[in-house]
Image (cartoon, rainbow, N blue to C red; front, top):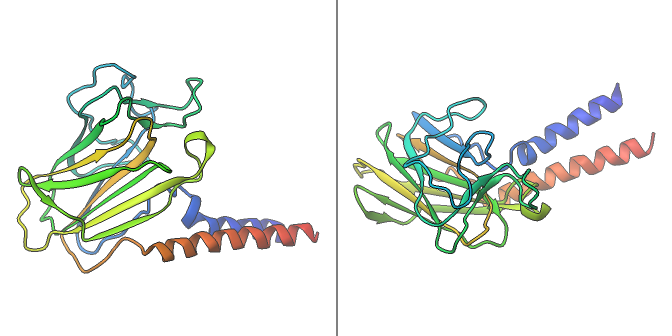
Length: 233
């Protein structure tokens, strides 16, 4: 019984870090809406290398991933494709740009009085990726806050991935439409992205890098303690 309790404790400690750590699961004040795309051809079929895509990819609506924002996702250029990671390649499930300059674009109409906007992405490490926001037909807005840290533990070639999160303060701006553009080098693995809209802004909602690192350290410590206890049995 004590062994099972220790295993449960270690699992609880690891949960903030590795239970779908590709998304930070950020909570905003006030009314919110969220859209999530998990790139896997279990959810999306027909998005093969070199093949024509539909004009827009609708956000996932089936459990456990849901969307309640008014958004569509397009591949703007190149031969990027979505793979389940079971096609004999070394790549894990994700979206992979097939040519330099390939970009994805999220086009949205706010589903509420937009004052707070957060973008999250889990992608393969060592890949420089550019994310930009424009609103009301083309006005560029730099992020108010930026987070970069560890992502999920399974990624391209079996290494760790990176997490990027951007937050924009839109207080006082009437947003009628917005576009988030993702520009990634060839063969970058993009595993999951999420957009969170909020009608209230009260400061930084994405974590400090040191905070997230501390959570990771706590999980590792819990696992180390568990192994020590089990080895003494």
